Amino acid sequence: MSTEIAQIRILAVDDHPIVREGMAALIAIQPDMILVGEACDGREAIQQFRTHRPDVTVMDLQMPEMNGLDALIAIRNEFPDAKIIMLTTYKSDTQIVRALKAGAQGYLLKNALHKELLAAIRTANAGKKAISPEVSLEIVEHNMDDHLTPAEINVLRLIAAGRANKEIAEQLSTTEESVKSRVRSILSKLGASDRTHATTIALKRGIIEL
Image (cartoon, rainbow, N blue to C red; front, top):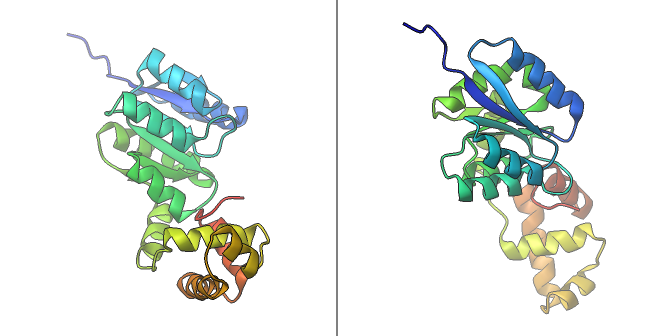
């Protein structure tokens, strides 16, 4: 009778070799895990997933060529049962929500990787959500916020690009008064003191990107 442990097959995706090496070293000493593939960007992740069909994929959110969110969506479109844990350096709640809505099985902060990675892989493999406590707190903290409307986000993007109200009105084919009203609403919803503060908050939370 065989006493072999069924190993969780893992794909590691990160554009930093040192992060992949760290994950590989952690996984190598686990009797119930095996690293079956590595990738350095989203496109390679999709190819590696097709080749290896891992049980759990651990993937960085911010990568060149193709980011982790786009790769997550592409993989799950092709393989709806794919279990993917997203890694990020930032506690950006908008990005977290986007990834979870797109079907991420988990979300971890890189600074807690050594502490939480192995437990998260086992949790995800069992079909449960594996979310870092810090990330959970971030979601709860902003869940009660008034969400910006698409029109307000458009205005915010142009504010971040350094446009004045008059220019924003012209670009969005609306009135300057309408833009001012949206700016007031943006400041109120984000709890920002001025336009620069609103931009800083929106970038930190991943509402807009430069």
